[in-house]
Image (cartoon, rainbow, N blue to C red; front, top):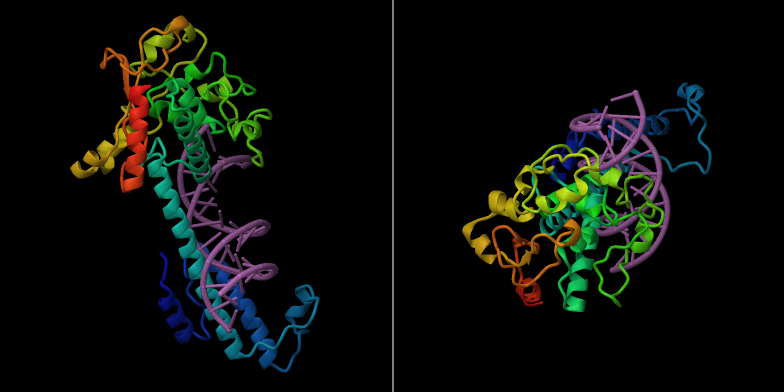
Length: 339
DNA sequence: TAGGCCATCTGGTCCT
DNA sequence: AGGACCAGATGGCCTA
């Protein structure tokens, strides 16, 4: 697909007067167009005519300062320079995408099959960072509901569903008090204001992004495209309150995420035994039957690991842990287990 | 078919 | 001069 720079340069040398193969399948025609344009100029230069040749009748007359004469050598240099620049730009974007892919793996809800878009990855990462910072800052573990709400702030409805599914939460549970204008209740009293709060919520839009679904927690957004699904172990907690009003559920958007979100995807898709050993684990325990069907707040010593405990192991990244990351993980682990 | 997402090309700007 | 970065344009692919 992508030809190397060397190939491109070779082609320039060998195909001087021929149509150049495009460095990529997609941009090929454009490049050829520009090269043809150059060749037109070349004809002008080489030929007796100035700018007004036959083609000049059809093409709008070029304005502005007259361009330098394009000698063959100059054209060649331009071609080579342009192709080198294109190759660099491709590499640069690939690097950017690689970094983004790395971010996808760190952020909750990683799935190879259901990739978050770039913009959603960035938003989720931002929310994730903020939520973790808030945990570290306050030294308290939020209830999972708030945590997920914070994660989903400003995300599109499909991503919200995905995140909720990843964390074994029924998105319906965001519904009760959550309106587009209400802040998440992750921060305890006196906590720092969620940085994305203002830009995301009041308008229902993410700043600078025109698409309506962004930035809202509207039930219609959350519940859109969710149909009948035996969901999570938590589901029973919410059924009594919300089922009558909410549409049924779709399965999680990304199949590998059905158990423990990206943690399961880690286990199923990317984990080696060593990786798994390295993976960090902390648990959020749900006490069953919170008041009014609301999930109980996290309590450090969930008594029934089967029905009440929600494993969130792997909320941190699961591969390539640096020492620092593991230290952070340990801290978080302590927070989630001690608070 | 429209809209979202993406990869790529391209020209401009800034910096070394 | 050349590289990095950026934003606009373009076209392909996919999905609702």
